[in-house]
Image (cartoon, rainbow, N blue to C red; front, side, top):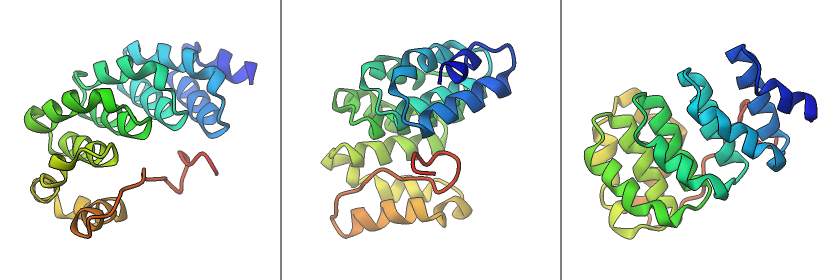
Length: 172
């Protein structure tokens, strides 16, 4: 694993991204501080990968970095930060996720925020799911992830974090 951790400081974005993804898949929580350094990277994909990896690693000690990611200029980075906050169980971030849900200009960022709020057990946010789903493309609404969110809310069931079956799954 030291080699992968060293790759996180590579000059090549692709190498940093692959290293962070591999470390997350391996469950290498000792790499979380090194991955967190990518949160300040100039490249959007590196910040996105860092936030996703921190979420997969359940790196609760980096909640502050993830909350700061909700203000990133890139919508994909903000979405990933919102998702990671739900994944790590960041109950202290509920007020900030609510503000994101209320004010982010991007519908998909709001969708990730409401998903995390539901995951965190924020009951008032469950009522916002239908409205939030209507604001996104019908193609996006057809994804099994968002169907799972809708069904959980409609059936008043708990929601569990979405597990990708591809490269982000910690089990693959």
